[in-house]
Image 1 (cartoon, helix red, strand yellow):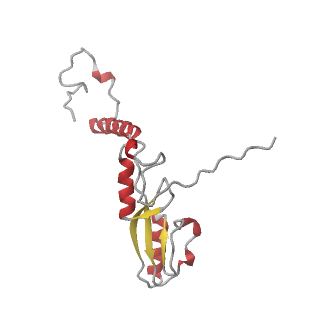
Image 2 (cartoon, rainbow, N blue to C red):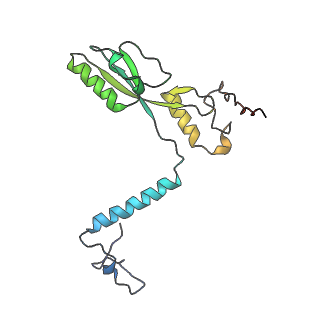
Length: 169
């Protein structure tokens, strides 16, 4: 943080400006500096908006209750769930299932695992594979193997692109 004088201006002001007119009444200097930092952070995020966000799925194991209580909307599509364990998309739902299991006398647990869909072939990636793919997405676009994104593995091939049907005249 820069050092400021009592009139809110810079320490060495090159212009004869009365900085007290720009001071927000009732605000402390720390609050004003925090607001300025927030603006800077938002502008940085606008610049780097294409950075992929880490996505997590929660591997939830239950001992006293069954998976039937979980709604289908909360499950991660395409991942297999077992009778006593499931992949949950929502941390809140996973925590609620574990708490219900512990209330029933069980020892339910939940583990966060990074997951991601390949932009090229649509394959689901878990754990280290998802992390590696996210790092590949951070590279320059000219290093990607396909237009949609980088290849997730050696077997990665783009899905078939269907052409639009022509209307019969």
